View 1 (cartoon, one colour):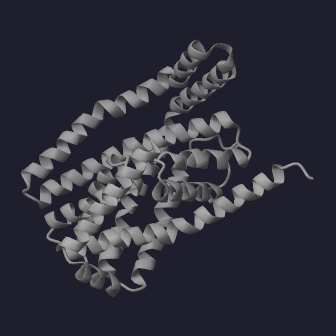
View 2 (tube, helix red, strand yellow):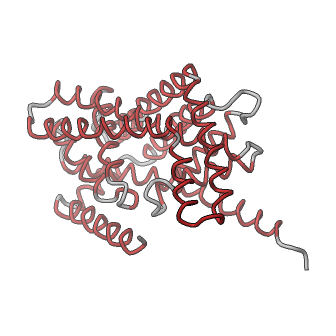
View 3 (cartoon, rainbow, N blue to C red):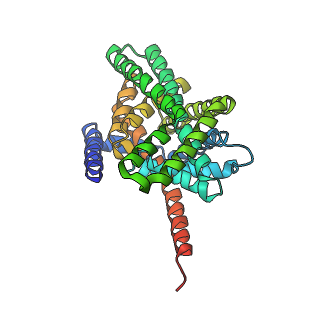
Length: 325
């Protein structure tokens, strides 16, 4: 797995480098440098959709058991930082954020169950967001081939998303626990019991349709607000676009990046997505690649500090748990 991750990461890095060199590295970096501190302001805007995503996760837990919105925003921030910068196939951040929630006093079963449901609704809401982006693309472009490929990918994704929700409601974790127990006997008995508790919590959360709808709507708002980063970045890159065009780019570029989860940070794939969808809107390759690099700059600006703080907290906790000499 580590070798495969390294291979895809190096391949993506080579692709990103090749795209920038082919289209003129000097021109791309000149455009990027022209934005100055504007890249910082566009990056800081990401705090808003993160807070909205935090609210989406928060509403799933019962009021008496859930931490405040500031803590959830911190947990989402760390989650995105781990997924955005570390080679964890976009799932390591979820594990870390669940760990933070448990540290904060939430019991493991509701903490993990809320995270599972939140992740699922994030996939569903991103699907809707991508459909919106495809609709905007159909209005703005006559590239039938690209539109057809995106539409086909969405059609293929429909049964996968439906199956993901269905298996959770039917008790996915209990089935996995029983399978492990059958293979390894009594050594996994505690895992089976924990899996059944987790299934009960997942089903309980899905029965609270008001919370499910609220979480899904907050998630969708978070995706929509992400277009603000594209709008601001292009404004500071001296190539302003409409909010609808920014929404189109964000929706389809995010879909491409999510599909490339095996590539660390979707490097190379994300740059190719910005180049493709920017071209469909009339953006030059230099502008599109400068926008892609602005997104990479955002990742460094926004995600490195939380990673450092999280590592410090982990180290402090480990030291506190060590027996005194």
